[in-house]
Image (tube, rainbow, N blue to C red; front, side, top):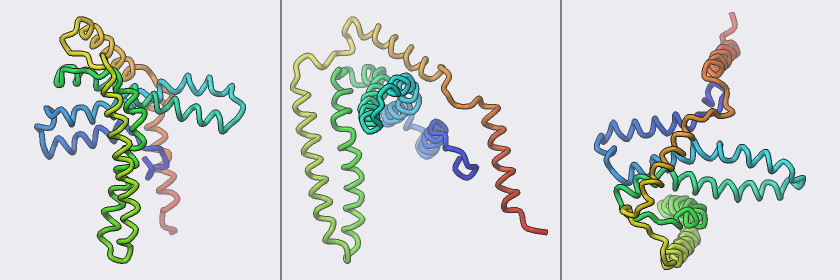
Amino acid sequence: GRMLFMDSDSLNSLGLSALVIALGNPFCAGDVGFLLSFFSTLGIVVGVKRLMRPVHMYLRRISNYERREQVAGLISGVAVSLCAFVFTFPFVAIFIGDVSLISPLTNLLTGTAASALVFLSGVGVLLSAVPIVQMFCYPVFLTAGLLTKYITVVTTALSQIPYIYVGADADFITVALAAVLILCAAALLLPTAEKPTAERQLTVLENGQKYFDRHKPAP
């Protein structure tokens, strides 16, 4: 998308990633970890924009820009956690059996810390491999360790709350699964604010023509 002066399509990128992984290991289609990762990302890609669209329309009433962005960021985090939970709910209920009703809150409280933890761990490994800057890996690993403790404390505290786990054999799980599947179908089928496919293809062709005209060698 960037080569043709357009934004990349997250849904196509996700599908391509899944295809590459499946070509290397076709049995990944039955792996619970792969299914949870794929569908949680799919939920975020297709659901967050649809949830945030009416929110942004409402937030326009807030005149203070900084406050508006802070509220939007908070609501966006809730939307990400909720979409991931909804799209993975059927697989958790079927393969794991116990559904954590508090998992959206857990994701909201630990998601940013987990992302920072992965990033800092990678940076620390790279720094430790270069002798000249090896000393800087220690504060990086220290910060990563503190983030790990934070995530552990939060998840442990939330797991102690009674009645947060529901077995897949509960009476209302079937109704909940049906509702979740309807929500997932709606998120996939409802139109977005993006341009129609034909118009987007025409835009790609026009941008491609402009690119080649710009780089065409002079006669």
